[in-house]
Image 1 (cartoon, rainbow, N blue to C red):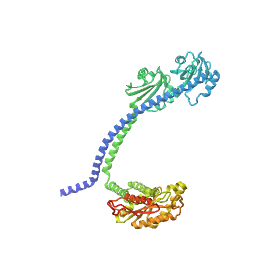
Image 2 (spheres, rainbow, N blue to C red):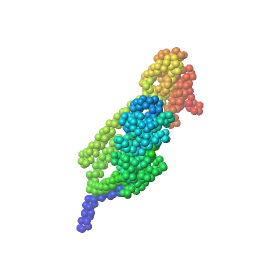
Image 3 (cartoon, rainbow, N blue to C red):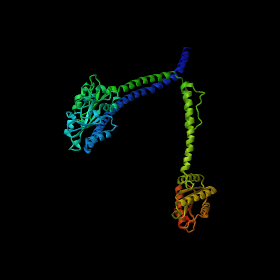
Image 4 (cartoon, one colour):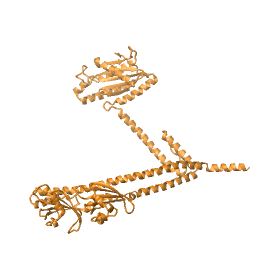
Length: 564
């Protein structure tokens, strides 16, 4: 009695836990490899994103340096233009007028342009308040006169305006040795900071533009607090101030550990034509902080998903999961096999699966409609691609497709198949005499005639190319094909289309006829070659005639011969 009771309890336990245990085991088998693969892929993604961030950091630094070079280059270009005006235009008044008129409005980083004479006094300025000022003690003014080349100063603070700026100078003597004037331009440092804005929005990235003394000229973030300060006073950059400024290299990079323990990478680049350098610092920990947070979040999500899968596998019943899936899978399989009317019935599905069934049915309806539209479009395109628009008959592609079909059909039923190749006699002379427009009209009329004969003889007509036509006659003997050939020849001659360069004084055709019973040892190309050979023979017999090819008939050793 106890044994029976034990067996009953075991059966109930197996019935209770059977599907759950199997689903739980399956979930563990599926989730465990996924967890390991997910962990590996996350670490790989982190490494790739760090490498991508480093590459982007380098690219941004180079782009910003290039942009600063372009700004300074634009200033140099404007100064050279002003110097040219001063060198080539007589009189300071006229050159000043031209200078003010030619000042570019699309270069907002240029505050003011001045022309300073050999005595150091400002002769002309786009701002009248500067006229007469003494610039003889300015280092950049002296250096421009000494070097006779473009000079870009270090950080300056306006004596009267107290506005941070840098000055650019270019001597007119570089263009005209007899002229000792120097053209100056004050550069707006606010704009120098704006062109670095793409660096200021990057997490972990610090950037400054410094002069040869290490004074900050521009910064993408907090320029009001940084511009004019020494690089030694900038947090996280003071540690590399000396190596970045004293390096003889135009470009370089450094790595160091900051006072707070963070690892930082430094890139610096000299701005061509100046003593200024762009210095960019990247805090790898801060730059990858978002990536690390994403990885931690992904691990938590993965843990929750794994737990949810295991719990779901334990509590899900086979009737609530497996059977609905099987119903939907069966419907999808029927649909995939071409049963476009297959739809998911919602009567036997749990409510959770009803939206999926509705979505599937909507998708199936759309796919069915698109399939019908696609078939209709393909049919139209196939017809268009197979029709010769001039004659209205099938083109060579359409004719070849019909020949292949009729060949297989005749081979299957052991029937004969005949082919007529038709060529307009002296058509080149016709075109030369009457013109191509009349030639096209002639081919159109021949196409109409052949279409009528094809309808009458249960044949299939096509334009094989140029002035050559063809007429396929399924289940037609050689005698019947020859009769149809005579009908074609006579019908064309009866059209009485004038052709004064022809012996018959009207348009005529030559017809080559071939007939065979298709077999495995032959192919449709041989039938075309035979009909074409008969057409060639008809041409040599004086044209306006019909010649039959003995294709498929024993004749000599090869079974091919020409018969009249």
